[in-house]
Length: 359
Image 1 (spheres, rainbow, N blue to C red):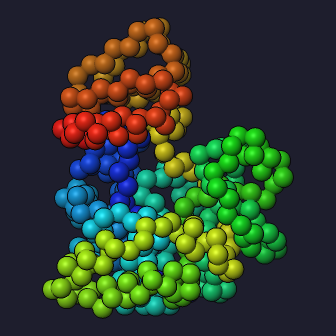
Image 2: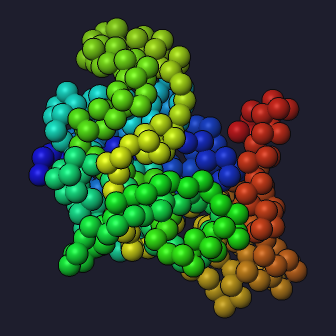
Image 3: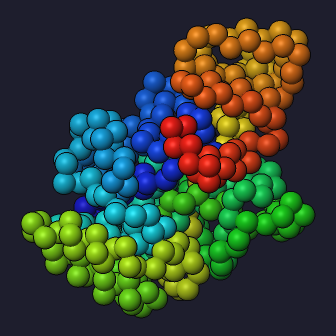
């Protein structure tokens, strides 16, 4: 197999993790679980089978300081800054242009920066299985997570025939990608079988992916080629800024995966959580005898099934069940656990009221 690259997408704003997640230090740079940040944990996970020099990170310019602080192990030229977020297809395409210069037949693994994954040996074997398919079949491969309940927060992938007779890790041809369903539809997917959660992990040969961009997003492809021609030149940043701001923002799912025919799926049975909200953090944390979780100094009286975090000082909670309390600096969040998806609305309101000191 050819050289293996990794692209970690780290440009998100993490608004559902306010107040800990701020503009200058979003969710992926926080040590939400363990001592390392989510980004550092992701780098460590891939460094067991990818060289540091072959790991790229795409992030936003506003995150440059914290990104460089947290990634001293990576070459500076592997840190790619988008002038503005344009969703996943331009982001992946931009990184592919860098990797292509080194080796167009190299295999690239694309990963979000903020997932919690255990069973790391199984994860490694799953990724390498996907890389083998990408190499041998010139396909674009995704890792599908075996669903454990009718989740409505994930997109789904419907598989066609299995191609892995006798293999330990199951492999499939993909039939179609499906949008986030309602609970009834998600339950039907689980009953039917053959549906997997979309993990956001993609594996492909650089040349194969760029051919797909050329076919299905020719305008973006042409713009990326103009940017690539300036890599390493003094004019690169100015060219990137001018061209990238004008490209269409589109996800890799919409732009490529829903159209291409050479799409495969490898089953992911490792423990996986995309940590999309404080509720998901609560669910993954160890609990005490009252079902409470969190970190920092806290006193909880007559309180059950709650998550409490304090960066400094003491937080006391009395007589509340199933709540999230997060104290960070001069901001405090108190929220019912079943309302954590609405935290992003607070961020929207703070922006509207121009209270940037809290963002």
